[in-house]
Structure formats: structure tokens, C-alpha cells
Length: 207
Image (cartoon, rainbow, N blue to C red; front, side):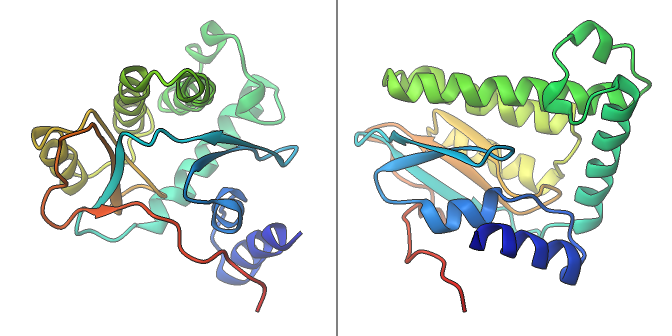
């Protein structure tokens, strides 16, 4: 699969310990659906996106710091080893997670709670419960900021700018430590200046 080849290229040639989500999303996304990806089994499910809201993205003005992402990956691997599970997605007992040394317990708590939020977001989208989707976006960002500690002041100011402009929910995206913020804009709320509507481009292809 081309997406796995793209991941191996980033891992082995670039030295970035990334997963397979980005190449899969780049090759499979379309205008009307969200792509639910199980990155272990590579199971793909398409979930219709609401037509009455706009998804926008705005650059925080700070580039991603790849070193921070690599460190978080190492911390998650250490937490999984201490818990005796192959990956943190296999850790279900939150009381055991809280017994991990700091900061590993916070990293593990973020991963487990974020996986649960992904499932909840998929269900909320299918139910067209946009209020719940927005809440989950905010909760996800708070977890990235507080438990994963992957945010920076510029990202926080960008989130605040989007919320002040009327965004129902907002969350940093990408590898963290800079980058962009995604927002859910309800009907009648205009995009802030410099924000871009999220729209698919041509699919990725093998060169």
C-alpha cells in the first residue's frame, strides 16, 4: 500500500517517527466525508460531514518543532512498556495509568482518552450532534495542551482568536509544538481573517 510506503520513507529516510494517518488521509479524503482510520488494522470508514457548518483552519505562525513530537513518541513507548501492553491503545484501566511516573501517566491518559474521543466524535457526526462534536474538539485540545503538553503560546492565542470569533470548537492539528488550529464554525459565523476553509485538493499519488 502506497500509504505504508510513504510512512516508511518518512521513518527511514527523513528520520521522523510518524504514523500512517497523514498519508492515508491525504489519499482518501473527499469533500463530503470524514475518514475514520484504525491505524493498526488499516480499516477505513467514511462518515458524512454536516453541510450546514464550515471547517476552517488558521496558521499559528509557528512551524512544528519535530523534536518535541519525537520525544512524545518515546514517552508513549515507555509508558506502554511499563504497563505491559503493545501500544497505549491497549491500555484500558485508567487507575493503572495514573500509577505511572510523571509525565508518563499524563501521556498515557491523553492517548487513551483521545481514542475514546475519536469514537465519540464519529458517533456524534453520525447523529448530527454538532454541539457534541464541538465539545469534543475543545476537550481534545485541552488534553493535547495539558496532558500531552504539545501546545505553545502562539497556538493558544490562535485557539482563543477562533473561539472569540464564534467558533463552536477548536483544536490544534498536526504534530504539535506549533502548526495550525482547526475550528468548527456554526452557521452564520464568518471565518476570521487569515483563516482558510478546509477543502480537499487532488488526492496524493505515487511519483
